[in-house]
Structure formats: structure tokens, C-alpha cells
Image (tube, rainbow, N blue to C red):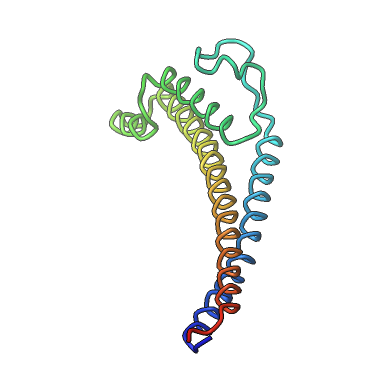
Length: 166
């Protein structure tokens, strides 16, 4: 084997070994991240009501929020309730309206608190949903890197075992 094959084999072997080590670490971190999300959501004891859900959420009735897709569904439930309560206005819009009126309207101030709480809760659930997707990505990339690393190591071994060109 000439020097270029040796160097290529060594480089592929080194990169492959690094990926074969990094991949499982990513898989483990992705899985542990997902477990942390599930643990935190479960600890919050958020439960869909048994009645009054929109048709698209009816299959969640009475269930607890324990994973990313369920967090998203509950965030959508909050979004609908919030839009109904505020007439479709956001916290920022209600705040502007309150300030424009001198800030003394107690009913509007209470509506602003409701909007703030609802939007904050929705944002937290959406963050859990996004984190859930990130754990999926990290786990998938870890599996792909593991496979690529093993393939590179095998290729490096094959290069090393090739007879030199005559």
C-alpha cells in the first residue's frame, strides 16, 4: 500500500472512530433529554378537561400532558380559550389599550393579567414541544453518525488490507 492509501485509511479510521463514539453519546443525550421533558410535564399534572374540548382535541379528554405532542395540543387549547377570553387580542394589544385609557380600567387590567398568564403558559408548553423535537433530532443524528462512523472505520480497514498497486 502506498503512502496516500495509508494516510487516507488513517484519516478515515480516525474520523470514523470519532463519529462512532460521538453518535452514541448523542443518542443517550437525546433519550435523557426526552425523559427530562416527560418527567417535568408529568410533574406539572396538567390534565385536559373531560368536557368542552374542541373537536380536534376530543381524543385528549381527561388525559395528562406527558409528552411534546400533548404539550402542543394543550397549548392549542389555551390559544383557543385565550382568543375567546380576550376577543382575539394579545397581551401587547391589551396593554396598549390599557395605557391609552390612562391605566385605570380595572376590568382591562384583569384581562391583561389573563392574557399574560395564558400566553406565558402557552409559551412554556410550546417550548416543551420544541425541546421534544430537538431530542428527536439529536437522537436521529446520533444514530446516523454512529452508522457513518462504523462505515468509515470499515472502509479504513478495507483500505489498509488492500494489496499495494503494482
